[in-house]
Length: 340
Image (tube, rainbow, N blue to C red; front, top):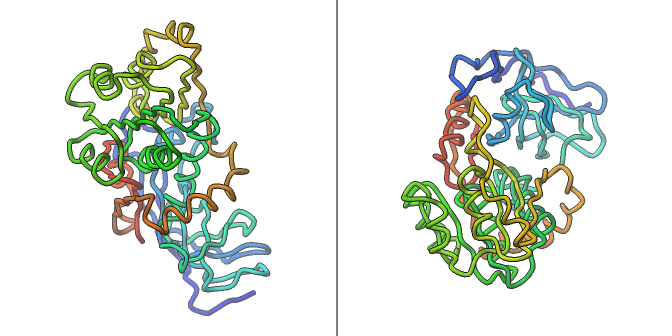
């Protein structure tokens, strides 16, 4: 085992104290001092440098049955993180290496080495392995190309388009020959970003008027693919503008995550019969087989600057919770990350 007397004995971590009803409140959480466990066989101890905050985490705060186990009350909340190995009990990983793992929200994580991926800080900034080159990027890639069966010439509509996933969906679609890419976002600043920096053909602020009307104006010839990050009014509008043979990939529905009652469904589902349209939900975890292809194709776009990305970086683990609230409010442009 690679070891040093300077290994930390305690570190701060966020615990879930109670399951939120509606919008999460600060009193549902606590930042606590916890013992740092030395790594056992086949484990590594990681000093986290960046941790991820994501919309899906809201679902894991509920006890309802879902695709991922709920967070345990009184225990640390897990999520994506990237950090430096400071002790190792594993061949092939040594102190000084950097790894991607799911041992956030905490300063130090002792994790099974088989559940880590070594990353190269020289090839790309460490934070990108949580976003544009990580799970976020793969979500965009798999959802657009596999679930939505995107093909050259398609017209694509993306909701939550200034977010980490949505911004990549639109750019990948453009790079692969979309005829038109339309995005929705929650501020005029984000709309400007979509068109001027990310290369969307059109974008609109969904707070400025009915989504269906704004979408018809932005996509007068309809849409072939809708990538859904929002649900609600956006989903109904997309069904209303769907072309024959259109496909809808449901990635997330952030508009309903904090609802205390079930949201009404789209009133126009009959259009799926008329258009022979298809709606399919997906989880990135079902598409990890695409990871090598994703990195091979998207990595060069990121390095060349053809695919642009933004990050909203919050400093300090003590601000993890506020960063998470910011994601739910839509404060972030691109990937929300906490730098420790």
